[in-house]
Length: 203
Ligand code: IMP
Ligand code: MG
Image 1 (cartoon, helix red, strand yellow):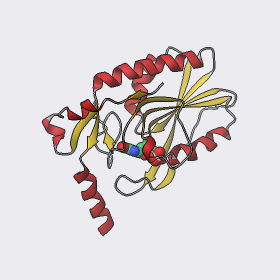
Image 2 (cartoon, protein in one colour):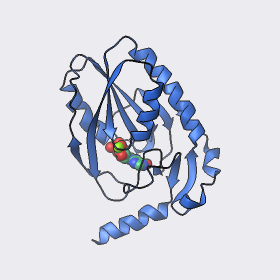
Image 3 (cartoon, protein in one colour):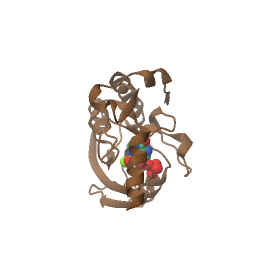
Image 4 (cartoon, helix red, strand yellow):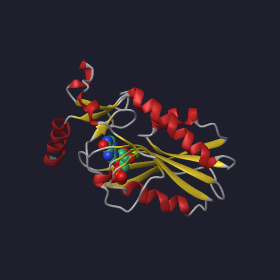
């Protein structure tokens, strides 16, 4: 099940500290907390009785993963894959693996967790690598989905929220490694990434 976002939240004002860079709150802490709990129930139903390995993509998943895991009443193992995109501004660029999986997933059920499904390029690079390790099955769970930006044919099995084409930060998601610590998901002010893009393009 996907929860469609109610746009009225975008009118909420952020606290003064963030207001210059984050123009609005898209998903509140309370909405996230409720949705993460209900997602955990869906996942539990599908994974009950299986040898589960949660594989999380670094680093945008940190908050989502921590909250989701504490609601998952399942025996599970946890490992991480590091993947970085060297792009400019808000566009993803070349993908580089910065940490490989250590746990053996052969014959096990894998829950692959990512922060946001955007163009789909990241998951389309990660999934074949995981499949080559011969897990019994792989299910994909993302906190956010931006379907309007998709260039690859890929869908998540579990989606927290489907959102419009905004560049969002907070609850683990970053812009240039900042804003991960915001407790909500907010829309980055376009002037921030336009500035960054100008700076990068001039170099
Ligand atoms: P994709 O490869 O285009 O699907 O993008 C996936 C990755 O790009 C995510 O895991 C994020 O790290 C990053 N990303 C995409 N959209 C956003 C966004 O709106 N805010 C922050 N990061 C994003
Ligand atoms: Mg990511």
